[in-house]
Amino acid sequence: MFFIMGINDGQKELNYDSGGMNICKSCGAYSRYTVVMTYMCLSLFFIPTFKWGKKYYVKASCCGSIFELNEEKGKAIARGEDVRITDADLTIVRQYNQQKRCRNCGYETTEDFDFCPKCGEKL
Image (cartoon, rainbow, N blue to C red; front, side):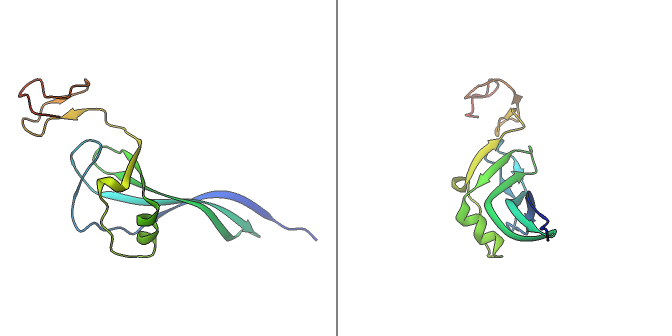
């Protein structure tokens, strides 16, 4: 007698509706958030039986940046609860768009300025 088992990683997109647009923590633009749960899974005879190591991530639609989501908020979203994601719940994992945009005049720059070189507004 033998057993067929394996350990693999999985990913599941969770149903999250913020009720509107969010302001991206990375680039400051309006964005929709996609919430994804990643996990490790033990399968016996190709049937997933046990999941562990769950982590929750948020992907911003504006710049493609990826954030790690607070575990309690991620679990609440997985249960189907109505939850609002705030900037305090997000930790930047990968920042794709390195351009900064001035909210006042719209000037875009890749330099590491704290203030806009065109109008002087804080970036």
